[in-house]
Image (cartoon, rainbow, N blue to C red):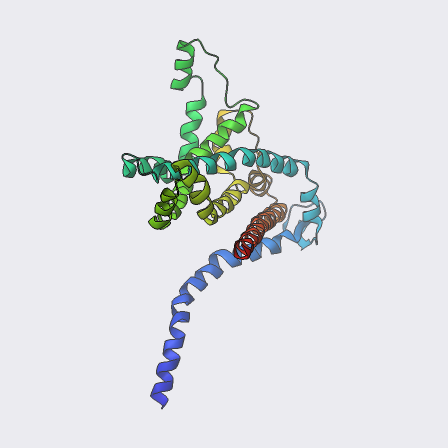
Length: 311
C-alpha cells in the first residue's frame, strides 16, 4: 500500500519536477528584474549638504513622483507620437505583404516555392542591428548604389535620412526584416486548411480570387490576429533601428523612441529611478494595448460564431 502511494505521488509530481528548472529561470531572469525595476521606480536619490561623501546622497521613497514626471515629460510623449506614426506605417504594410506572399505561395501555380519561402524568410534571420546598419549605408548618398543609378537616370535623389522620409527609411528596415516571419505564420495556417474545402468551392464555381477572399483569409484570421499582436509589441519596443541609424543622420535624437529615452535617462543621465518608471509605463501601455486588442478580437470571433450558429 505504501509503495503504491509513493508511486502515485511520484507520477503526480513528475510535471512539477520538469517545470521547476524553468520556473527558477523565469523567477531569476524575468520576474525578479521586473520587480526590482518597479521597486526602483518608487524611489529617488536625495542629495543633502554640499559634500561629495557617501552621506551626501541617500535613496528615499518617492511615491508616484517619478511616474508623474514621466507622464508630463514632453520628450517621452513626443517619442510615443513618433512611434505611433512609425507603427501606422510598419504594421499595415508588413502584415499586408506577409498575407499577399502567403497567398501567392499557397497557390497551385506557384513555381520554386521552397526557394521563394526561404528568400522571403531569410531577412528575418539577419540580426536587427546588422540589418539597420546595412540599410543605413544604402541610404547614404556617398556610398549607396541607388543614388548612382538615380543620378545616371537624371532622377531626383532624396535624402532618406533627413526629415519626413526618415519614417519611411526606418519603416522599410522593419518591414524588410519582419515580413518573412509573419508570412511563415500565415502560410502555415493556410497549409492546415483541408483540401476538401477548396474542392467544394471549385465545384461551386468559385474563382481563385474568390477562394482567397472568402475562404482563405477568413480561415487564417486567428493567425492574422497573432501576427498583429506580435507586431504591436515589436513596434512599441522599437530601439535597434533608430539607435543604429542615429550616427548616420542628425534627424534621429537620443530620445527618438520611448525606449531610447529610457536608455538615455538610465545610462546618459544616470537616473535609473526615472528610467525605471518610464520602462514600467511602457510595459503597462504595451500590456493594455496588446490584451485590449486580443479581447476585442475574441469578442468579434465569438459574435461571428454565434451568428453562424444562428443561421
